Figure 1 (spheres, rainbow, N blue to C red):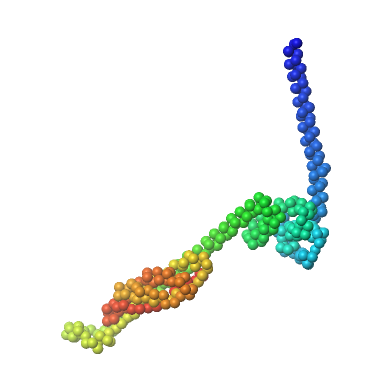
Figure 2: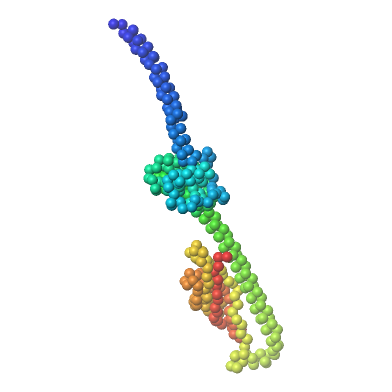
Length: 334
């Protein structure tokens, strides 16, 4: 047998098979396209028509003038609920307002009639548009409404991955807002602390000036003493010691109490009354809390602030001496 003829015949058979295979694939593709347009798509359109239509654009938030919810929804039958759901879909009320939206009506249908095909198909088909609506609410920073809509979507399809995306975006937006609010609070606190420091410095300067004026006035009022009288006055009698001039302690350097972070986070305000000794060197000691409100929240901050105070000590006969004072320290956020 001539092998060359056999090989040539096989090659011709293979070459003829390829166009046939391509033609078969083309026919299958055309049949699939025709089935989509003639069977699947009309079926989906019929389902959506039964459900009240399909939104052609991303769903916007419910308008302020939306119709009020129907009375006595609990008593409605399946057909009435489907009718209300269809109306809500046509008006793009997929998730809002609460109590008068398509998803709630369809879910109530499924409560009354589990497996209802119209409600099931409508929820599945409108889910992407409702998810877009929830995302728009998140972008408006309406976090309470966004959480309600996400929970409603979860009732319709709890395993849908879109829910994970929406929840992540909601959490991220909340964190951004919290950070912005904290930044504003920190700026306000810094401004208040600066104002308090400025006021304390001004008060200390005024007290120091008043003390200097008082000392100058006392020195001016003292008569000029002769050497003989000075020698006599060098050893005053006990009665003269009782009449020598005394001065009160004067604050020369204040300190702003640090606001406890826990109290700031809890938005707490209060006050503390502390008593303390002013030593002859002008430092404070024996600092005790007399009373406070709320108790123990601001005590430590108040004690630490008073411990940093510096005074011109009280004097008796020109000699520095210890004295005792009380002070009320306020803790306010604004």
